[in-house]
Length: 229
Length: 298
Image (cartoon, rainbow over all chains, first blue to last red; front, side, top):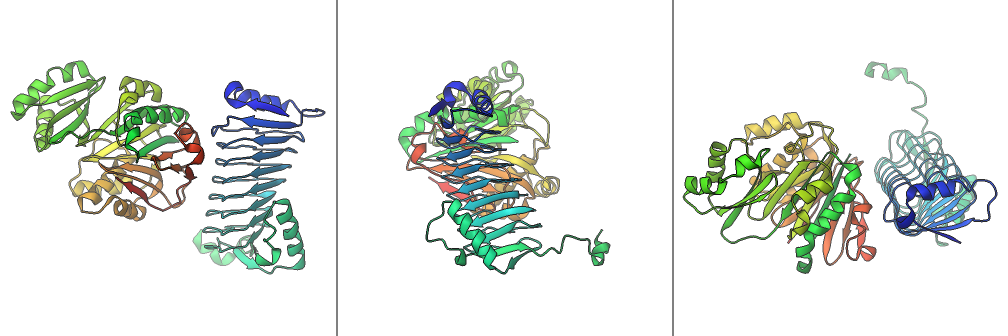
């Protein structure tokens, strides 16, 4: 295992080192120490690495990740795994606002709570939150899955496109054009897989969840609203 | 963008280190606000005495023999401690209003930063590390304090535009964000008797809280009513003589992290600001909820 001391060598050297590992490398297991809330740790990695970030991170940790599995042992600051393309990011603690924003693929697991705007504008990412999520989560979500084992805050799924939202606990309020939908066998099956990949407690069963999605009323202009413009 | 740090001590043994801890936290927030910096510190209370912190762009001229001139005007003993562009005037309680009137006449260019029993405010344009060094903040002790690093959006980069703002005795407020209804609110507060020093939106928020406290509300109630009356983006951290409060607007896009242990309550715009606090590894760390008032009292 390679250990990188961020306090000694700095962020730029860390990310340049990780970026240089595209293609063939036998240095696949990394540990990053002395994180102290620094920004952009392990952002832009594009190799099948196994990275453990020890401690708590600042803005944009694991942003734009491709292929790598990045595990954060503490909590994550704003924009963790923002625009993730593939691979997996696992946060053992809590995540700040807009976790997984605009993510196009891959998996984001948050074992604590996520703050506001979790999965905002998600475009294919799968997000599994073991705790609660804050307000305006999955705003304008286009595709992918957001699974919440706890409760959701205000305005869940506002202006939603085709992202699928599964919540086990209470939803404080649904956003514009977001409605509860029937849980069909294919959804239960997908959820079972997401819970397994999301390292959820074995007590979490797909049947305990409700599904939310777009009512698709905002897709087209409604001529009756013309006077409002 | 701006940076906020705050520290409210529960453990008295940390009090001599307050200035040092706040300085470290403030410097960590430099890249959130390199324009100006300021610090409000609640220090020792000398029984029967009040403090006025003043600032001058020409301290050599304005602070020369200021204690003598004030002594003559008030007929009361006055001591003055000069720290770069600021000076702390210590005078008998009950002489504050007379001293302010005398100051306006004797030294018209001097600005009052704060008034109270324990509060001192130091703020200037420049990098946080330079501002902190200029006033030797690291050597100051106290029970609680608030710091701010400014990246200006709403009004000019000047000493008076820097935070914290103080609009009432032993009260101060810092802000990350911008208000959209501050002009209307300013007119309303002027009607109620407030005098404003700047065109800054944050000064309006500070004066709003002061007005509520003057009307007899406690800090929690004042911040609660601010949620209805203040429109815009804000994370506020507020100090009073024995209290420390935090509130975020309902959208809550301006960042905030808090930590609490048996020894302190700490606030940072980012977790980075908190990493060197004692026992942070085992502290309860959380993000304040939107539209929720938090406050602590000694």
